[in-house]
Length: 545
Image (cartoon, rainbow, N blue to C red; front, side):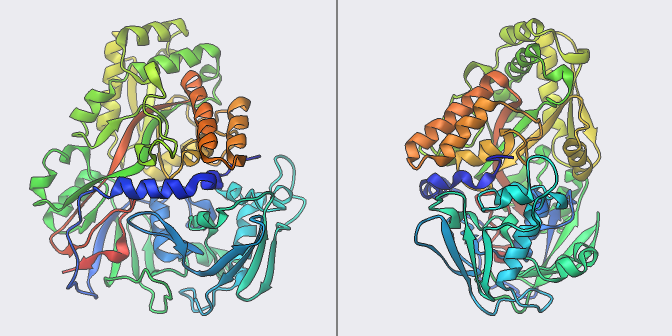
């Protein structure tokens, strides 16, 4: 999988981080802190993660939220600005920007009492990269020398470990990259780079049943599909110490039920607010509500691995379907203006110098009923005569899917041209997506890992990339992205990324719908609730009154 890795945002990370900080500075403040009950337990909304909680095998928000609570990586991102700084790492240095030496802060422990060492990282990264372990985010290690030996594009691995990783002593290891990568350290706060304890390997089943990390919280119990209990890790050595007595993540399959519990005081933090509540939430919660910009885009993807969706005619159909969706009306009526119609495939939080380009999609993302119908008919009509849009029924998606289908139906003059297809849970839905079981369109979304255009393009549309759910492949797109990654000039790199993005306008493997704000509501029992730029509650900062 050449170049199919999210971390190549780094050529322009410094500017991007600054832009995110600027973009979030005008957000509403949270409820304020101070004087909390350090022993109080926060009851928070959650959904079942798709996969077991292995750091390299998690690329969705429910699992990611837990990993970020129970782990601290070499680098941590500021919850307000996303600025990276050393955490478990004491230093990450290089004389040539290609060969790096990582020194750990000594004495850090995992919640099982074992010590975090250089092997904790090197063994974790080698495990994550090895293709036979089938980890979703294995391509994150692509820049390390020897990656292609453990994860060849075809055939069996030629090696079990990457030649670019070497343990020097308990607190030091070296990393040899395949090319100069001046801001590589800033990428290391992502969950795929977390360390794992020895028990991860010696008793993997036990680890999966109760994951062990080195972060501010530890898992004390986990009943799947019901609740996970997390409590402060007493021997945590980092700066992100919990200001509460723990967090209970409660699984809800109905967002309306969760919101009702929030109003009743049975739930303290709800970041899965149903769309139906958006018009009254300020009154319902007495202003205990935060609506802030986030690096999130919502989309509709097509299964290009299905023959009926891979023809030249199907490209025109996909363009027409994009033009048939009345984004301004849906974002106003369904979402009460907590979404903004998308005009490209990134996010405005990047800013212009970071890669966002308003209007890049052009006419293909602008509602035009006559042109939409013309393109769909010119392309041979909707495959099978009816478009289905699949979505997970345990999330707040039914209303907007129905609205999008109604818009398409009105354009086509056919009340059955488009229908929603609910799938019970997020985990079930994602399993169908990743196992290539989709025959029609399906809802997708992207929450940025890093604030850069690269993170919105390469993981999603590069050939065989880890989150390329549509299985889109265009050699020209791949080539432009690869050139942008290798370009040390910031402005030129952004331009090359945008040239690649323009190919999505014609190919339309994924329809951009709207940019999403982060939203969260809380009960009167808690305070100091905020969302980071990735739209995840900062659980350790929440205080209980």
